[in-house]
Length: 327
Image (cartoon, rainbow, N blue to C red; front, side, top):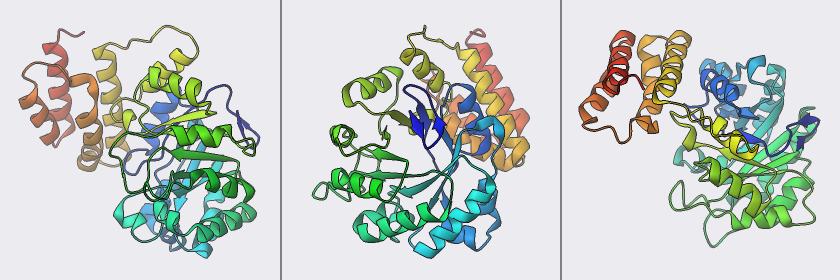
């Protein structure tokens, strides 16, 4: 599979762009474990144009995570074009346009998935951004605004005609947010459309290696994108990659997985500072599957999520390792 001139091999697996999750430290870990492409947190075009410091910092990327994409969102054509030009100077491998974020503060203002209610504006933004930059431009969107407006099969052709190099489809409508089950049948219809020549990347409910394989085999997508299942589990890319390549399951031990989470914690503390680095890591500690099934773990979980210093949190995690016999 190729996006422009970027050769991603067979059946690539992408890390989805996620706010407050896909910072540089987490992206580097996911890349190490086999992610084919990683994306930054999504970037507000208007904030980028206004040179808001916290937004500009999201453009920081490293060679160790390539190929890496920077995703932007907005509702104003001029701001999106200007933001794309700024992003291009940051040196990513591709620029992704977010027409899929369903949260109210984004979609409710007409950006992200809100663009599904204004297709002419979506297409105008896409066309103008493609023409304004030399990097490959891709799009991420959803099936439609709601179950009565499932427009993705037509929309995919329209976006392709704007010059994008790949399309990621989340198998839900905006109205569904992240509830219910992702519908991959329409993703498969887009992929099987003979008019579609760009790669189609499927997204939604890929939580295991078996589900990733099924997505490729049943729906024929060119790549799959993994989102929420990566929380506290960057090694999922190794599991998926080995399954797709016919290799043995890497079968990380509890201790190995804990070491990875401790490394992520240290990375975040060093990159930000101790209090905010710990807070930033809590999402992963709360979501990681490695603590599931541990008897009487609730008091430890509460203490873990309330810890405010690196030594305190590290000690709690190490005590858990010891409790399980260092397995």
